[in-house]
Amino acid sequence: MKKRFYHMLLCLTLLLASCTLLAVGANAADPMRDFDFARYASDNPDILRAYGPDLCQDELYLHYLNYGAAEGRVAYSLRTGQPFVLEANAQQAYQNQLKLTSAQARLGNATLTPDRNWPEPLLTLADQVLAQVGGSTPYETLLGCYDWLIQNCSYGHNTVRMGEGGRIAEDAYSILAGRVGVCDNYSAAFAVMARMLGFDARLQNGQTHRAAGGYTGHAWCVINIHGVDYVFDPQVEDNIAAGGAIRHLRFCKTYEKVPDKYIRYADDVVQDSIMAGGDVGPAYSFGQGGSYFVAVNEARAEAGVAPLTWDTDLARAALRIAMGEDSDTVLDELERQTGKSCALYSSYGFYPAPGWGPSLESSRKSAGISIYGASMCMLYSRT
Image (cartoon, rainbow, N blue to C red; front, side, top):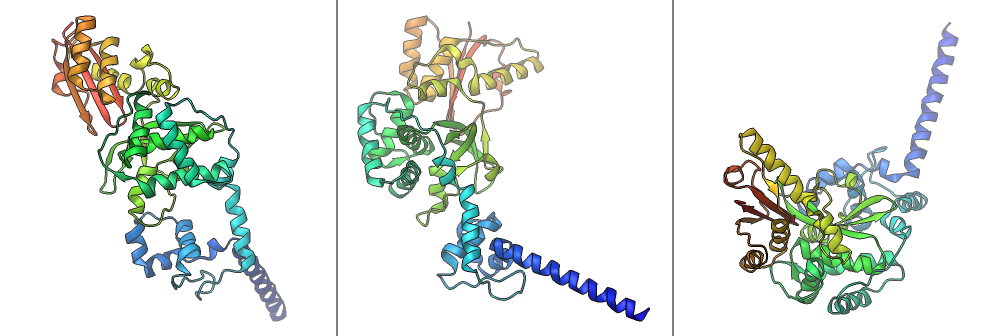
């Protein structure tokens, strides 16, 4: 009986040893699994202060791999509790694994259709940037454009007008010429250069998460690759870098990789039309402005007020104002051409609740509402 007990104990010991070796082998193949990221974060609070408290395990590992070890920081093994040692073959295996899902692989697999349908002054400036950043592949050039905007431009309001091409072309030209702009400018310039390289880039309007909490109106760039949208947000990346290293946290990321960072508005056909270089069609009752209009009528119904009707002329004028044209000029032109006068409400970065007072006034019969980036314009008419 005793002999049998020791035999079973020996077998159990060998089994545990085999499992341990398997675990060690697995960790060696993927060194990130053996990296004590919690201790690394605890021992280096300056990293969290610099990059924010939401760093993921793989980001801490990559910090150590690319910067920390060279700076003399010490990391530890989860297996042994001893200082972390990265075997050369394990490092290579991990890097190979990263390459399978890297931005370089995704962008290298994109179908390219170069688009140079932009005003000549904008093409000239964009070509200068493309020549400056170089790159032996479209991926390298695109990454260079992203970094160039962050390294050479700053956030602020300083419009440099080109006088042609529509709002996106104007926004892109302004920041490339003046090196100052807001999210619309950063994203427009990046989207234009991406499309010149052949990528299926467009602008996306919505909101982004603020460091202080909550959300704020925002515009960023999206590139679609084989049906999947990838986020490119050079303006937020500029905020994160704050003059330091660019970590590409908003470069070629799926929305799943940046959870809770963005709220997307419904795709706006006006935006698509402008990006395609065409005229704004009559379909702007859809998209963001149209969705808000529906919410206004729902609020009016709850208040017992007759619904507003959608006015295409007002909507067209509202879009022009939201895109930055002088409101007095637009409204004067509207009245001359259509005989319509209206009440105006516009804002930047703040959208009133659909049930706010002016929207519920029974004397108002029709409306046109447009949202462009962080700008909103609502025009109400009594007819």
